[in-house]
Length: 562
Image 1 (cartoon, helix red, strand yellow):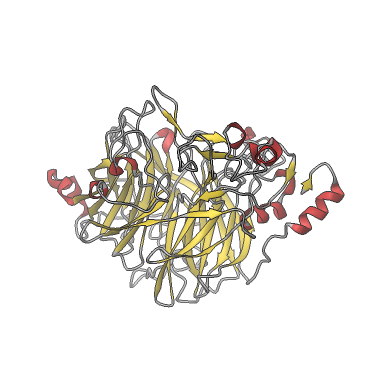
Image 2 (image 1 turned 45 degrees about the horizontal axis):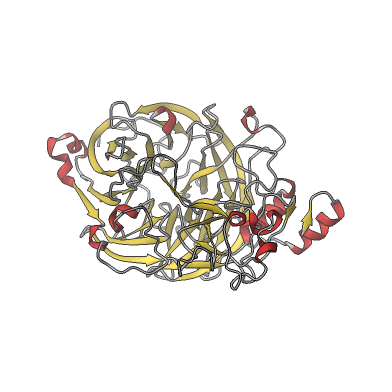
């Protein structure tokens, strides 16, 4: 145990909490920051990139707009214009994506648990058209070939839990020759929505959580994020609260599988966690607790001819405090433990041990006798690699926590909106891996993981997908200034985009990261990459050739209608 009141003990503790050794030649270097000046107001959440105009598109959910930021000089990002969502729907703008053909798409909530919308623009912000999708779209993406756009329609209930629409995935045919056809009255015919009602009578794996009050399976499943395979044929959809992935055949608009993610055993070596925010210590150790993987962001890459899926195992709970509402969160110190399963229950339930850790009250009491025989916490505090059929072949265990200890021990497990919150997130989800993407550098797949609470991006090299190795970590948060001061740096990464060398203004790969709390978007160079390598690609690890006949992208120029 590392007692932060003792420098000698701190040194000894850090020695026993060694982070994985960095390997390889890749280094991440901060270049610049675009600032909205909005703190904790949705100033920057999801980021996408158009290589032709060298613009980043960043959602500003608080203002229902998308910022188009020119990065022709990545060291000096400049706001070109804003796309005002205006009268499209009445809820938040939740996501943005850019196709290989330069079409910009936004997911927009309809408001009040109503169906939402997907809006399409050219890279100059001119509206092509709007189509209706499922209830509460939370994410939008394109297939790598640009033929389809997909939305993950979360279908969350209202705060009273009296209205719970079905979750779904909408698949939109993208006109290739004349995108302005979206403006025609028949545009909604381009949308096929994959309903989940086919699962209502299916027996699912017990680790797939269907637990909302009086909810059918279709109502309870909440699609969160979509990753499309490099061949543009298969979509993987995370249902975070439900601890599962959906597999969808895109061309047939058909659900083909439900992948149960199981549970992480935190009692096993390498799977430790710091479970208390009241021990004034760094104590990453094993506990008799299971973690629900519950991924948020997911991405794909290809290696050795095989497709792999990566998941950021953030975790999330249902906390609806209306009337009647529904809240599943309990602290271990406040529940009754089965003394046969936990003979040391009194010790475990102390605040400095497991007493403060948040767990779900929907699992762990299989005999329904009112006490808990097992404990299930939210998220796995890790990222994982899966094969195309969903088999988990790697999990980072407790490495992300140890990386943050090595970087800044005195701010370990701080929250995303305060810089003096040592250990404050240990009882929740620790570093909270939120954002994830992949990219091919020097012919080798790399994984980029954004840690929402502590901040920063961890980089792993995945030449062996079953054993990714730690490469680098960068955190541009300023812990020495108040978080809301405007000098607090980048707080809470929400979205990451990889920019391949052939699309980059510098002809070297970059990443851009949108930070939700600070309302900033930062650009990072990837040093040590061979920009002449034809395997340096965009679109989360898939090939994306530059336009023929063009030696370099334009410099934030306007584009002619496509």
